[in-house]
Image 1 (cartoon, rainbow, N blue to C red):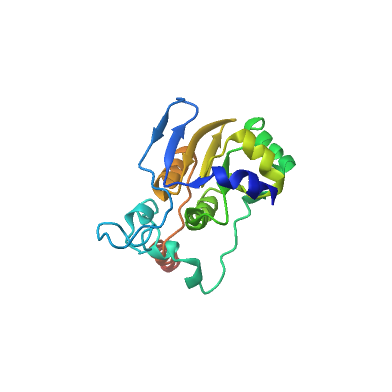
Image 2: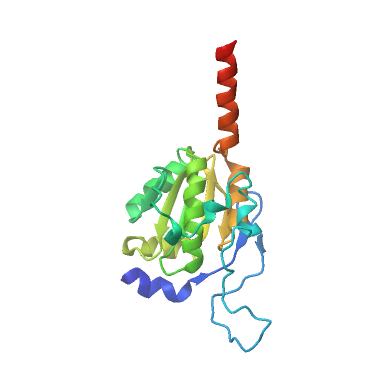
Length: 219
């Protein structure tokens, strides 16, 4: 594929960095560890480049404090596939990208541009997070772009997308923030800050509502 041959040598998977686009042109860089195998002879170096998933992973569970740890259950443990939200829109051509950008800038439609790749391990981990964020912000359109799509090759070169995952946030016709890398905490917190996040009702709240209805009926 043309996109792979041109772009992949220049792309990396990053942990994360954040850039505020509207307020400052400066870029705040955080610790970045590139994906590479490490020798297991040194006991101080982890045997795997990514932390093993656990329900107690604070980096992921804390932003969704109202959710159960099962939210981050790996896909292979799911008994039934979870449908992709309707406001997650795949973009596969320059025409579709231009239309999405026009809605975000010219029409001031709240939007998130999510650049990903099938070969990027952090992207596979962040994907379910982006889907859940889309469910909780139905007024925001999440445009998902695979950087290996041939139809997007020239567009991505102009945008200078050099690492995946990359998440760009648009609000009121302008790009507010860009988060580069797979840090779920910053991706979620930025979403909370910019848009109205909806929280699903817990079983306790449903039970309280049912109890309230029963009391009203008795009265």
